[in-house]
Amino acid sequence: MNNNCTCTSTREKFLVVFQELKPQHWQLIESYGWVSKKGISSRDDNIAKLDDATLSNGISVSSEYAGCPYCKAKGIFICGHCMAVNCHDSDTGSIACAECHTHGELTPIEAL
Image (cartoon, rainbow, N blue to C red):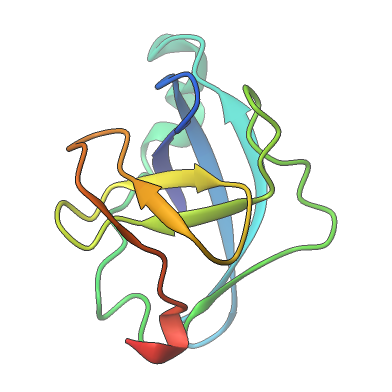
């Protein structure tokens, strides 16, 4: 499954690719810079929105994931307000969504 993502440092858009490891458990495996809509058209058919049902068994990040193509952050978070996927560089702390600008504390998905 592919999903749009926004860099929290530059606000640039990029594509993240998830692989389903088991039913409803997804692993982030790679990312692609957002060159243009035409540049990702072969992957565009599979762009989805992450939601509570999709994430019922969680997500993880592959040890081989290279990170955000803009700031190199190795993690992601999903905004609880607008459900936008954002890059993030740690497991704890304050966050701000690059899409809706909502601020909050990062909560592990297991705690939701």
